[in-house]
Image 1 (spheres, rainbow, N blue to C red):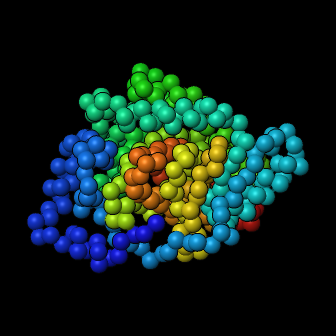
Image 2: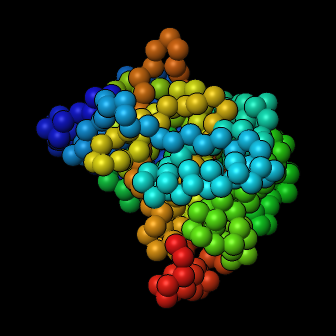
Image 3: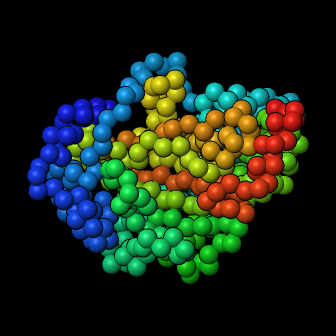
Length: 345
């Protein structure tokens, strides 16, 4: 994937009549999102989406690949579990990312969840607009970028968001086209989240229930992203380089992908694996593991339309500490103190 040079981006943004604040407001006021631009037949990426290139290159070295961990029988086979715990420890220390397979969620549920996200974005615009807001206390929040007016560049992506645990919304509060599958998928993700927290606790040399008993992953947010095809993907990004400020993220990709992880100052592709979920360590887990596990930066590329690609979706579940959904809790600071006094890892 080619990213435009700094000179190219600066030249594209050099027009004297460019009023960024006005263009941002005008775009936000449409409530149609990036998909609305594509549906209107746009052929050039608006300047509000232009990104400055970073200093890292994309790796072409096949020796770098995100670990894939098989969770089959991990609850029944103690030998297999010890091996999986070691794999989780190694991936969390070196990569901050890994993929899991055979984790107990039917493929039919995964596919229906992705279809549900697609249905939300492809429904009539006037129906979608009912959920468009920047009030994050709402049960469903649909908008373009949460930081549209503060970030240096907008992302080529639409998102809808819901807090699903510990106090889930009512079914009638969710979009009719995907509410049922959101609850069904959440049930499976809760079970997987509990298992992952157990494995991470053991990987830190702790009792399996240690992190679970601290409620470090009891709050769950669901973010459903829609990445329309982009006419000039070299000028923008689907998601800007960032690290997740949560405890743990569980990501469902579709077959298109576009996710890249920053590893040893190189961008490493995370190609979709059939039936796999991507797991990444958040800032909070790095903190309470005393930096034994790492939260690393990652991004999502914008992708050019061709005969096989018009859009793609991804679904992220963010696991948080229940006491402070957007911050750090006293319990978690206490955990860091325990580790500083000689407790494992």
